[in-house]
Amino acid sequence: MHDALTRAGRALRVVLLVALALLFLVPFYLLVRNGLASEADITAPTWAFFPRELHWSNLTEVFSDPDLPLARALLNSTLIAVSTTAGTVVLASMAGYGLARIPYRHASVVFYAILGTLMVPAAVTFVPSFVLVSTLGWISTLRGLVIPTLFSAFACFVFRQYFLGFPKELEDAARVDGLGYWRTYWRIVVPNARPVFAAVGTIVFIGAWNSFLWPLVIGQDQSAWTVQVALSTFTTAQNLNLHELFVAAGVSIVPLVVVFLLLQRYIVAGVERSGIDD
Image (tube, rainbow, N blue to C red; front, side):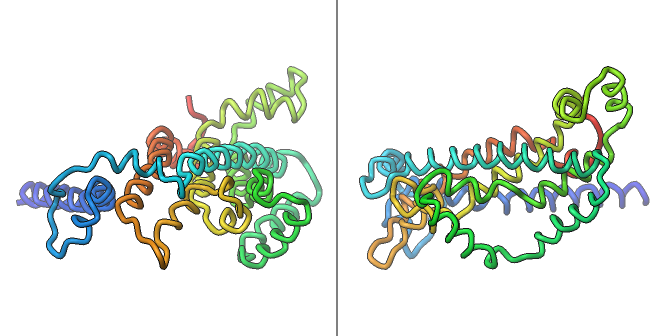
């Protein structure tokens, strides 16, 4: 009786997981289905799982549209996401390591002050940040899109918590060899803290890639549009290009899927401070 209940429970879990997986795949199916369909198939009153005819030309059409610089937008998003990720990881990791390891009388005060910024709504600092960027002449520039978003209190918190559990024996051995905090950080800590770097880097990259409001306000020239801003131009009061919208949306998530698949095994390990990755 117990074995039968166990098998039934396992079967129920499998069915539930399969159902959830299929539900998760529905948006991807819609992207592919509608991206290769015509406007008539997308807006047809009767639904078909696959369009009557696959329009592969939609893939090239979305990149050849003179009113939508999608290729340029993808390049801008890549530059912004990579720059933001690299800068945030470096700054936040050094700040987190300093707060966790370097003796300082007011380290706790500084840490809680940084942590307190997480409770400040982004809308509060949005206007002052825009005024500062505008005063510096950084509108529609990579500097204006990246530099104001470089430091992350959340990333600093994650790094600090991770480094608190970092084996001190490795750092003590480095001290014996005559290394200071700076060289210990780069030679010992960074190579042995890959999980947290990958986890924070993935989270920051996804956030930077999906950012919309700040690039919309700062990237006023079409040459400075990111992919999210470009996607918003598909649906206007005068125009509605559904098949191009689905194709562009599908293309825009490819980098996120690739990054997540490559680094997913580090995310949980990094956030939960599981230790050193061998």
